[in-house]
Image (cartoon, rainbow, N blue to C red; front, side):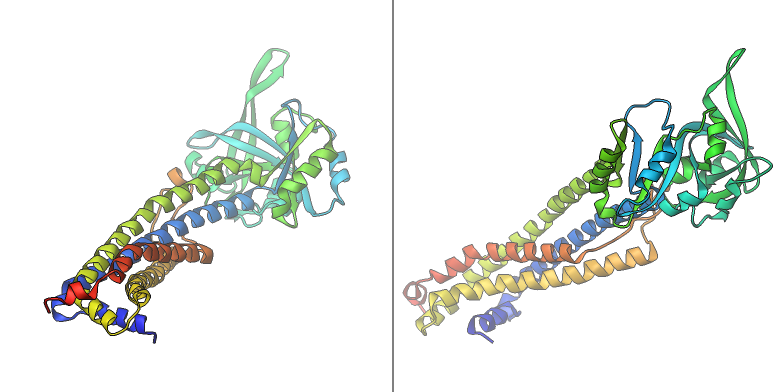
Length: 409
């Protein structure tokens, strides 16, 4: 063990009249540990929310959408686009889609909903939402006889009073033009499936039906308003969106999942930065405690420092002694904070100890996802602050004049 480290450790141990200084050092350790732990937990929450939302969005949506550039009468010759992109590199699957705002009425209540017309076989290849239904099956959408099938989110089904195999009404708010003028367009569907994603917006407002059935309910011809793409690498979504837009011509516009949800993820990134900055102030308070402990230590150890210098200790060694004291306090607090913070994140995420109101936050519990590099960044920041705060007291200790201190001893 180096001379400077040995002396620094001895000075931090409680010795009769120096117990108060050691108590201040212990409080400094707790302060650093609290700041590090709070930062780890806060960043883990932000990462968890971002990761959970990303997983849910990618599980319920496609990687790239091809849409009408200007709202019109839909994409009419959509089969030719499917043929054009069928052998495109990185495209795993494609599916046509027709989105519409409708009213869905059940036995108890009615509510506005997003009705999506899909090709069931193609839809399960581009999205995970219909692959594992809570009740029923996706095959029920294409029925050769009887009422057309519809799949509802579980929260919507509960709100409107619909169950598996019950009948609901889909009302087109645009109405249907007849020789006697526009009338309310209404079509009956039978519930053939109920899904659950855990994402409140989808579970409470989305419904799926076969493409032909939705076209009939909206009094449309063989048109769609979106083509969905699933890629073999979702990180290529932006690049593929540009390529698809070039190949499709001026009438269509491509949008990746990143662009579609960019405001959400940008807001989460800003929130992460602001949270880290504000909670990081706790570490500054802990650093002031380290400064106080070191200043008091220098004042009480003036005589010892003077004797060490008289015995031949260099001033650089004296400076290192007090620097090592601050670094030992910072390292101990940082280690404790990292261990406790990661343990707390694991427990809260494993047992879902922090529930949320899904109707408000879109998530049923707070997810925690600590990352290694976040821990490394926090540790470096904590040790950096601990080092900077030792510069003043260590320099003050190295400037002690032995003759003045020992004159009256």
